[in-house]
Length: 113
Image (cartoon, rainbow, N blue to C red; front, side, top):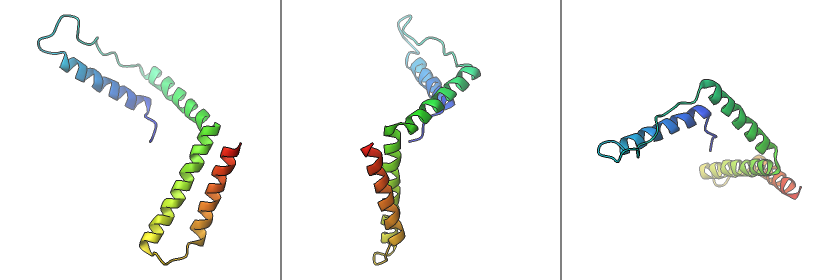
């Protein structure tokens, strides 16, 4: 699942505020509605985007990030084999099988560290 950008996050925040404001509309007790929506400044959105990219890069280089990337590669290779066998169940797949084995070996090496 892709990481949401700060702009997407801000759009979701604005939509949630609109829903809250509409829900509190009509007959309501005084003071129960949401506070006025204050969108984040462009500089704040850019700073948040930088922080998100830095956190993502740090996570990707962590042991958990490397292990998950290796597992995802195994899944991609397995999906390629599945698709090839669905097209022709009798075909030999030495290349994809080797790629799957190499990806699985990467998972094992990554998890053994």
